[in-house]
Image (tube, rainbow, N blue to C red):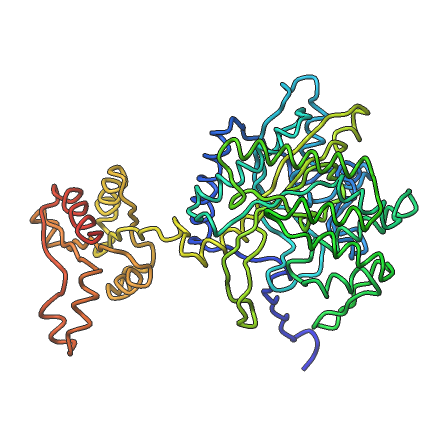
Length: 500
């Protein structure tokens, strides 16, 4: 066979790794969940704002939690003026640009919330995607820790607004200033150790996922995961690693202060930065307690570090404490669904002046998974539309009129759009679609001003108990006749009966 007669190869339909398609139930459930979150944000006085998915790369900065990709973990392209643009990797860096660009027109403190997709050019894996949705709230221009305390309280209120019971979640609080003091105690000071300090934070941030031994490996020579991929370690010695592990292992609760003092004595450090950090988290604890948020809801915890570089003060994380089964069938604590902290240097990169900021971000997909595991996910299932069947092509206008009557009454409805020649195909479509009701009108019914209503839900139940096709045809399960003028009233009545 000549090359000229060779058939062109079909294009293979394939989804990029690390990206997913979303179905109707997932989208509806997401919208319902986010509406509840937005209601809490609004109650706290926050207003919505929106920024584009693309930003100039230098405006985003290099603040990613993981930097194991050749282009620093972002998806980038060059604009027609040769400037590099990147898809945003979070919603905070674009907010800093927005505030700086509109600084003279913004009322400070600037309190906003926003949601949208973010993109990470990282290695995909189970539960790790390159595109995912976040839902953030931020306060810009408020220097006091009362703004951080409010963020923690709002995170707790969001959890409860979604139906997550007390005891099934906790908001953990720490302070980067404390962590900076620990770095000083183990000798990681100066610009020459900046990368090491950041990698220490990223390693500790994986504590809930990898455990103490996994973090030890990352702080030391490195770690090889089950797939064989190697992550290079920070290269600390055993003494440095022991101090870091001791610090993050301080148990929250009544003995917290005693354990902190014990750590400070053994570390032989009197770091003013560390002392300031402890004072700040103590003040946050006093504020939230005075508002009725006890330690079962908001808790100071040294293991909370957050992996992003730009945090400068208090950091916090929303953790779900109930157990779920992982990919191996093992029971594990669900873990973090969101977090944030204070970032007083992001806007300063553009303005040259101090502009304090604090905020938190919710991982929407992860939180949805948590709600599903706890049977708290709402809004995913929506009643399928009432189907108006087509018996006569010459009566399309009449059938469409029925559809519009139902829609105008607030009822989901559609007219069959496929080939109407085989009526059985229409009912098969309705069945697969999950339609609750089919509207049927042939020429005889039209001449008499009548309509046949088929209760598809009841019909399915009755059909299961009928043995033969002949018996089914004779009984016509779940079907009855009404006057055309009673269409809307009878459909409403039947839908209510089905719901009950």
